[in-house]
Image (cartoon, rainbow, N blue to C red; front, side, top):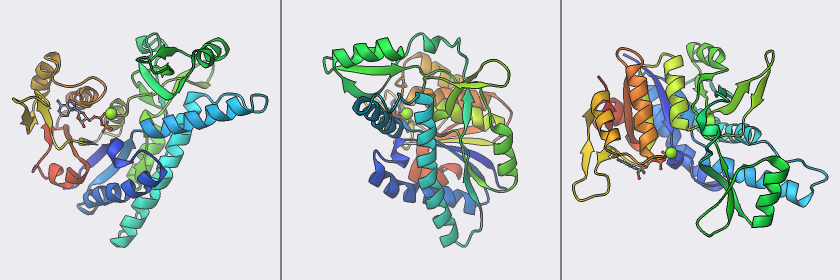
Length: 313
Ligand code: ADP
Ligand code: MG
């Protein structure tokens, strides 16, 4: 029977620049349409690390070259631009792959805002470096003019660091649900979502942050009542003692086992740890929910239980 599946696409599904992305999305579309062809409902979330860095840098260059004409572009707007640009490529690749297989199905990207808590401690401790390296003078100016947080990065120069707060809820969730129920293939929560917080009245204000896409996909999967959360990344399985002689690939683990491994530091912060944390949170959010972490090209085999690391009760 068909399942409702949220797929979180990692960096290797999109490439590092424009031509790479054009090529990468073709393979990504094949992997996704394989699941659609098997009767599953698929909702797609994705990362945006290289893309948002590229856009932020381009916008900052514009301000630098013509400061009287262009004011700096807020990071939330850069995330929105990355959603549009990535959605454009994904939508087209999916459309083409579906039509090539004779499947008539609409594909739509939802520019998705994700609510964050302005009191999230992550705002007081920005950790995520983005964009280009700067000189001390440039950095000082941005600190003074824009209130940016800047760190000196290993003797190579200064870089802006941004907060990575936890996603609380998805503003467009009802539209996303309606579109999924109507049979559309939906791309949502790109780059973790445009981070916003509620101010007076119904106003939403963009936050200078980049949300982790694994956590955003976890919230999305819960809020669309998915059966499965699949996190597609650059490894076929999750390992303990990763990269060491006693490395052991994991086929299937319970949330309780995952928590023990997390506490023992088996998963690297910023890469595998958020995936396992997201998987555990999703599985514990309701009965019958499972998560899978595997390689993009193994998605179909993973859903069939043949590979990947499954997290379930
Ligand atoms: P993505 O762009 O898909 O989010 P990341 O680079 O953030 O990819 O995370 C995936 C990477 O995590 C893998 O390529 C692997 O190098 C690394 N990793 C860290 N710890 C582990 C582990 N315990 N098991 C498997 N991979 C791990
Ligand atoms: Mg990552």
